Length: 133
Image: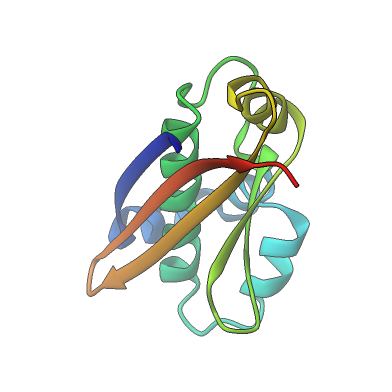
């Protein structure tokens, strides 16, 4: 059963502008250590961060909160599996919210997809509750 769905669209140019103006502050406030380390190997850092920012926004929408209720961007880390598929890792208030919205006897699975095309990055997140065990 689907218990949450979210989407977001981000202008890569907007992220480029933010990086030029507030690079260190923006990156350390929004992205996990793992995301920051992965960015070091990327040619187009603006697109990399834009896709992850869009996915974090889509995730908080799927959680039903947006960035509120104590959830911060660093509570959500977007990792890439060896296949390239994005994987959403939650901690802190985001994980607490996920646990609260997951029906008893079920476990939550987060599905995410991210894409970019020229000047935009887009993400979709679906949270599914499946039988536990």
